[in-house]
Length: 246
Ligand code: NAP
Image (cartoon, rainbow, N blue to C red; front, side, top):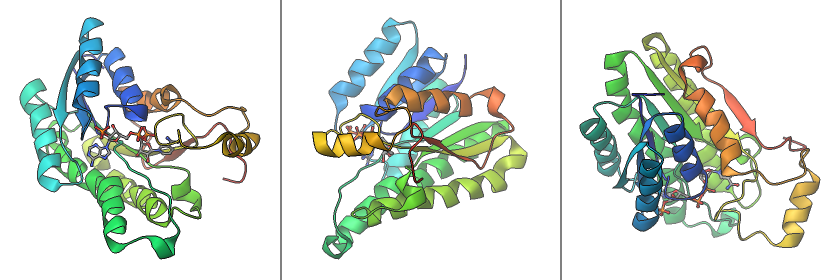
């Protein structure tokens, strides 16, 4: 990925951080996007540069169209182009549907789905010019199965499948691929609240017998974002350790 430029939304921690670090070690110049965790994002940049890579941090709430545009504009201004966009930023808050307010619904859709539309729309203009691009969306297995307590989250994560498949069709002839990665249970702040009993129950259904790591997700993203993956598009690939019933 030498000479290529990647933007990873929500890469100040968790899965996004692992993806950004992996793409940087693959040789890409990376924009680390954060919403609140400026210091963590700057530390990641520091570490990438210390290892001989190129990175900058940029604060943007990608659920806001003008901030998403500013993120992509900054990548192009600082590094000259954009080749890879990973739509990773996400939030989750389990709640029964009858307790989800309209505002909470909207915030979930804005962050987990609309942000991917805003960023993709901004990035694809540059990608079309160079007739090359890789767009990867981080969905979730619950986007495939649905889940009690996650009506809003699952709806947004399902939406990413339609968004990606349509981008793949609309821009495939211009050398742009769009794929979805659907992680299972990955160790991060998002899953840190699970108690031991919940973890044990989850793990009993996972073939490899452990929770996943950000690096497990990043390995697949690295391939999908590479030149080698030019004939892989419109796919939904699970990184779930072989979860039963999915
Ligand atoms: P996490 O540890 O909670 O990190 C979320 C990241 O998203 C943070 O960097 C956060 O930035 C950023 N973010 C949130 N809202 C944002 C916004 N409006 N604009 C810009 N950045 C924003 O979550 P994670 O577990 O790494 O999850 C990453 C992605 O994987 C999410 O899309 C999640 O739905 C998906 N996923 C996770 C799991 C899992 O088991 N962990 C499973 C399936 C799918 P700040 O820290 O700066 O606020």
